[in-house]
Length: 96
Image 1 (tube, rainbow, N blue to C red):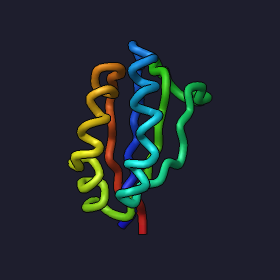
Image 2 (cartoon, rainbow, N blue to C red; image 1 turned 90 degrees about the vertical axis):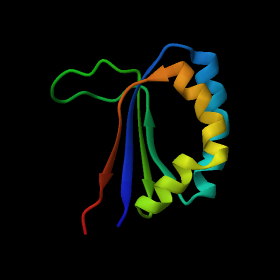
Image 3 (tube, rainbow, N blue to C red; image 1 turned 120 degrees about the vertical axis):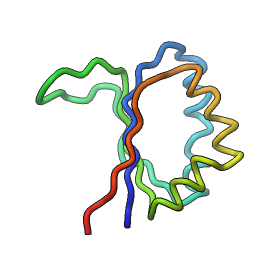
Image 4 (tube, rainbow, N blue to C red; image 1 turned 90 degrees about the horizontal axis):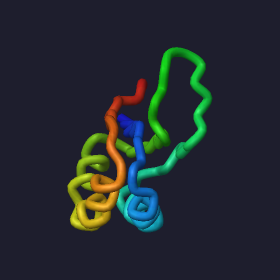
């Protein structure tokens, strides 16, 4: 079953975040992930939103997500994301 990762980020170190972003796509696709959306100006239609960016990723299944998230390649680049941005990341199951 497809799973989706949704990150709601507050970026406080733009150069370091950009370093992460420049290396992100090649690692993501290597593990079967797809970038569905990345928006720094989402339109808030309900409630309040105080973040800088929302990112939506898709993976074929939970195992593919875990393989990507735990991979040495992603662990290496994620240091820059963790140092440059914070916020919740949700993993949600798709519907069948």
